[in-house]
Amino acid sequence: MNDFEPEDIERLIAVELARTPSVGGGDADFLGTRPVDWRDLSPEQARAEWRALREWVEWFTVRYNVAVSVVPACWWKHGALVEELSALRVAHLAAFDESDSGFGPIGWHERLALARTRLQHAGAGCSSGHFELKPRSWDAVTDEAEWDAWITESHAGRDTAVSHE
Image (tube, rainbow, N blue to C red; front, side):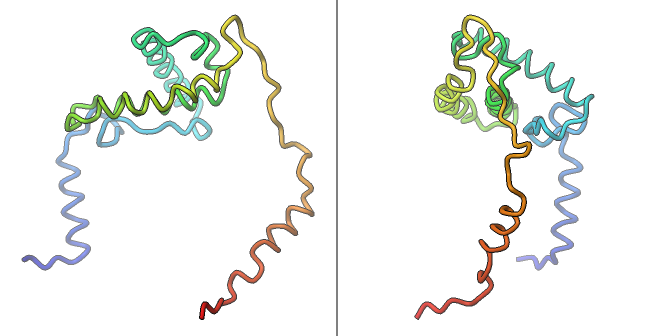
C-alpha cells in the first residue's frame, strides 16, 4: 500500500481533473451543469440563464403535456415557480448527461413526480391570465431592538457546559 501525504493526494486529484474533458466546455462542472442561484447572477449571466430556462420550460411543458394550470404562460413572473422549474431543469440536464451511469433518467422522472404538487401550488391561479399577488415585504416590519435582544438572548448560555450525568 502506498503512503501518500495529503499534498500528494491533492496534486494527483488536480492532475486527474485537469485531464478530464469538460462536458459542455467552458466553466461547466463535471456534469456539464450547475444549479442557478438567481439572486447572485450578474445581468449578463441572468440574461443567459433566463433564455436557457425559457427554452427548457417550453420544451418541458410540451414534452410532458404540462397543463397551463400547472405552468401558466406567466410562469416567469412567479418566483417560486421559477425556482422549481430551474431546479427541475438542472436535474434533467444532470440526469441525461452522457456521464450518467444509466439511472439518471429514472431518477429524473421520480423527481418530476415529487415536484408536480409544488409546481401546481407555485403557479396556482393564473391558468386564464396572470393574477398578480401582492409581494411580501420586510420593509419596516422587524423591530430592530427586539431582534437584537432576541439573537443575543437566544444564544446566551450556549457555551456553558451541560452535565449529562
